[in-house]
Length: 555
Image (cartoon, rainbow, N blue to C red; front, top):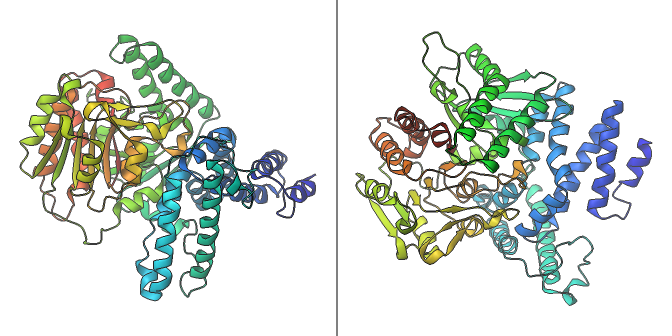
C-alpha cells in the first residue's frame, strides 16, 4: 500500500499540488497509525508540497485563500509531524519542524528582505541581482489581486497572458519566482553559502532563548507536549491524555463567553477567571516547576510560542497561583512574559540595526483620533508631556500616508485610535484614522521602517485572531508591526477599555524612560514596563478582562 502511495505522489506523476497534498496527507496518517517507517518520507514530502502550494499563489490574499481552503492540512501537518518526531526521540527535529510549519506567510515575506551584506562582500553583482528580484517579487506578492479566479493551480503559464488580469499576475509571479530560484541556486554554489535561505537548523533556532526560556506548546490530537527551550538545553514536558480536549474546551469557553456577553459583564468575568485557573493547572504549573528546577530566577524574561488553540488563550495571565502568604499572584507576577509568532521572528527582533543599537532616549510618533474615543485626550496629553521628542499626528493630520511616513523617522510609535477586524480577511485589519480612512495591515506590511524599535497599540483587537484565522499564521496588527521592523510591540487581545489607556501609558513610559539599565536598549525594557504598568492597573481594582487584555510581542 505504501509503495503505491509513494508511486502516486512522486514528482514524475503529473498532479496538481492540492491533489498531491491530499494523497500525501492520507499516506502520512496511515503510516503513522500503523507504525510504518515511511511516515517520515510522507511528512517531508508534505512540507515540500505545502510550500509549493503557496509559492504558486501570486499575492498574500490568494495565498491566504489557499491556506484557508486547505486549513486542516496546513494547520495539522506540522503539529502531527512534530509529535511523531518527539515520539521517536527527535526533539530537536521537532523544534525545526514546528518552525518550518508556522507563520508561513511572514516567513516568506521576511525572505524577501533577507540581508545581502555577506553576499555583497563576495559577489556584489549577484547581491544586486538578488535584491532587485526580491523587490519585484515582493511588489507582486503584496499587490491587491484583481477580481477573478483565486485558484491558480489550473492556470498554465504559457496561456495565462491571454486570460483575465489575475492570470496575468500569476504568470508574472511564476516567471519572477523561477528566476529567483535560479539565482538562489547560483548563490548556494558559492563557498560558505550552501545553506542560503534554507530552513534554520536547531543550532540557529536555539539562539531565540539567549535572553530567557521560550516555551513552545505542541497541541496535537496524537500527543501534546510542552517544549521548553533554554540557551543550553531543551526540556520536554509530557502531558495528560486529556490535555488536547481540555485545551479545546478552554478555547471554546472563552470564545463563547465573548460572543454572548459584554467584556465587563459578570458572566464574561466568571468565564475568563475559570479559563485562567484551568490554564494554570494545564500549562502553568508544570512549566513553573521546570523553570524552578532549572533555577531560572523569578522576574526573568520568558517567551510563549503557542500553536493551535493556545494562540487564542492568555497564557501570560494564568492563575491565580497558590501561595503560602495568601497574596494573589498570576504568571506575570513571577516572570516577565512575552509572545513570539515564531522563533525566527524573535531572533530577527534582536538583530542589530545597520547603525548598531541605540541607547539614547527614543523619539515617539503619536497617532491619535480623539473624536471617537471618550478618554483619548488624557492619554494624548500624557504622551505629549514625556521627556523625549514627541511628534503628534492628531485628528485630520493622521492620514494613512502621513502615518506611514512618520513611522519611518521615529524609533517609538504610540497609537490611540480604533482597531478593526474583518472576519475572514486578516489583511483588512486596520487602524481608523482621519475621516474614517483605514491604515490596513497590508499597508503596514508593505512599509519598510529602518528606524522602528517599539510600538504601543492602544487600540482594540490589535493582537486578536478571528475564529476563521489559521492560528499559526499570527495574522494580526501586532505581528504586522513586528514584521515590518518593530523589535517590540504592545497589543490587545480583544476590545480595550479606553479609560485604561491613560494610566497604563503613563506608568509604562515612566518605567521605560526612567529605568536605569545601562547597555539595554529602550525597546528591550518594554516587556518589564508593560508588566509593571498592568500590575498598577490591577491595584486600582480594574476588572480581570481589562488587565489581561494587554500583551507584549518581541524582544
